[in-house]
Image (cartoon, one colour):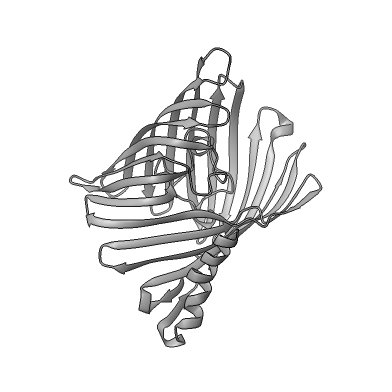
Length: 334
């Protein structure tokens, strides 16, 4: 905690004290540009509310500070410090969290357009939803299960990525070590390998194929995952879909057991009028091992008066009425 406070002072507050106003330029939603060190200071915050017949919660969530820059021609850096679930009330129980996590922290070397190297803690570059990390940029408050149940959201290790001829792009990533802020992830893992290959088909259509393997520490399991995704976008309409499949090796049992999990979704987003978007998403998830089986129809509305602010409302319809859920959130980038 003390070390993170020192980082917060060094990278966030010290530049504001050292540099003059003439070298600082603030743009709403894009942060404060610090020209002498070619860096930008910004952040975001989210407030959310969720309610079903069996659950109710209010959260001051995702209070984050970012500093990133391109101080040298072939060198970039990125640091994100976050207070996740800073204040929450869940089923009447209040909680105040003081821990600061390193959400992202990496350096990047631009060797060529086709070969870029990233080292540190970064967003796992898989699928359509996971790379869109900041809440204000997402269409709905909730994420489809393809983004939460098949691979770690963050990887601490190395990533090689770039653009290839014929409108191809790729990402490959690996980890074989203890993670940075490893408790702040959807899986506790120290061994990961995977990648994704993407292709642009004209100006409006993108497709992707991905796959990988990782080891879960608690409970002791291994997952091998495969997936595909597609995105079609025109001025007033966006259509997207993802499919993920994973083979599970459950080593924590007296005798190792093999199982699988499967999930997919299809989503449509339509701009009704300026700054207002209607969202419909159908999602499916099945985990044979844990006997989890969900079919979720999400109906949502996203109001963006400006690009750095979003008000969202959604309702998730499920087969069991008590699991159907209302969600709403406000998010802002600064």
